[in-house]
Length: 266
Image (cartoon, rainbow, N blue to C red; front, side, top):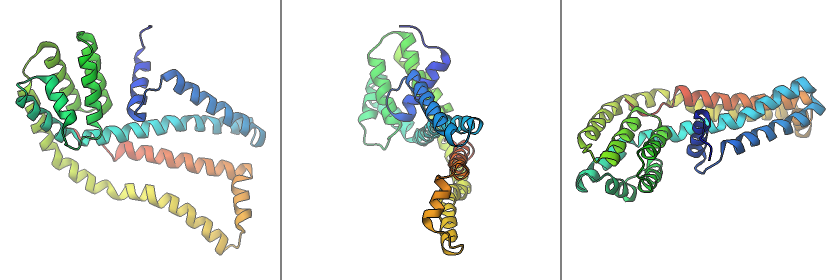
């Protein structure tokens, strides 16, 4: 029954958004700790304590990086549904006589392609209908806004909060969000065209270069495949090198998510 701290609440929301199911922050930290200890104990026997500590720290950070990459991916996909979501919500809101609960229910049931935001809206509607407490209504709308983390989601969540708590007509405010999203569409399309090449290079070229290197070592340097894999995974130097190749590859993907695949927003 204790109240969650701010950092603990953000971690719980991030895990829920990234994984799609509820995982407590304590359980996630326990998994990371077990992974750290397992890699450290295994590595200390072959590469020494200092190198094993570095490897185990990197191994423990991989789940955090993967969660962060998944969170960015979900947020990016959800942000690109913003124009469809706001348009459908505004239409249903007007059809249902400015009843925000009925509008949200109709949006969730509509055939519009809302794979990410549709699930978030369904959860939001469930939370809104299960409480009449203004603080819990604010918490539910804030969780929806955090799952997408864009300006338009913050504005839409605030409008839904106002409508759910006070019954205020928010049609003009939602219409203003839709106008700004349509203006941002042209800029997003141009950015996507310019950054598509670097994404393909990272996801395709890096694994391809590693495989080509192995084939060249076997065909031109006449290194037996068994000897090659023994040097790669049977020695401390080869295993350390392979681990950092994988680690830097994941870091590179994370940087792409941060720099290139920006969320659709205004």
